[in-house]
Amino acid sequence: MEVPAGPDRVLAGHLLLPQDPAGLVVFAHGSGSSRHSPRNRYVASVLTAAGLGTLLFDLLDPNEERDRSKVFDVPLLAERLHLVTRWLRAQPATSALPIGYFGASTGAAAALWASADDEDIRAVVSRGGRPDLAGPRLAAVRAPTLLIVGGNDREVLQLNRRAQTLLRTRNALEVVPGAGHLFEEPGTLQRAAELARDWFLAYLAAEYTTPTR
Image 1 (cartoon, rainbow, N blue to C red):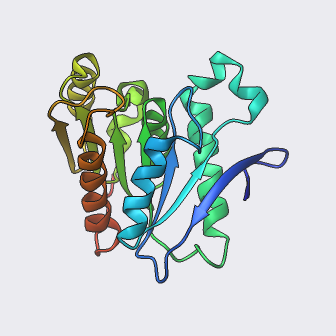
Image 2 (image 1 turned 60 degrees about the vertical axis):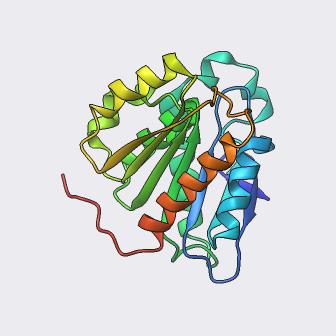
């Protein structure tokens, strides 16, 4: 499908809604990736099997993806995420669904940045993410946030631990033993997907009120 992201920008996306979805998870991929990412598509399949809708879309159009400055422009990526979320809330099939964000790499920073400006985002999950890149906005995040990092991804793990100290909302850090940055090791991506599924079900499918500022 085509997802509007402003008056003159249309992004490619893939929306999947199971029957009577408990919520909707919008994916924000990382640098060098897209809606076709096999890892994000696998996580999306686990979420869909649990009764959650998913939207995978490209944060940048093909021309923008060739501009490395835009790939790491977290405020721009967050704004795209915000615009797509606003569009989803105007669609009959998704307007009533509680929304969460799943981000990987730089997409995790965009998800946290965008959620800091939207009190209705119900949950955020970061897989192998760079939440430190959202540093100026971390303290304003109100959505319950789960940080998932591979145990062998030591540098990113340290960055996540530092970023976690800046969060003022309910949060958790889960370390997947034996996993690297891309969670390519046997069973590691499955574990990350299960952790994400349980987090989203806890905060999208259940009644939870985000704390006020």
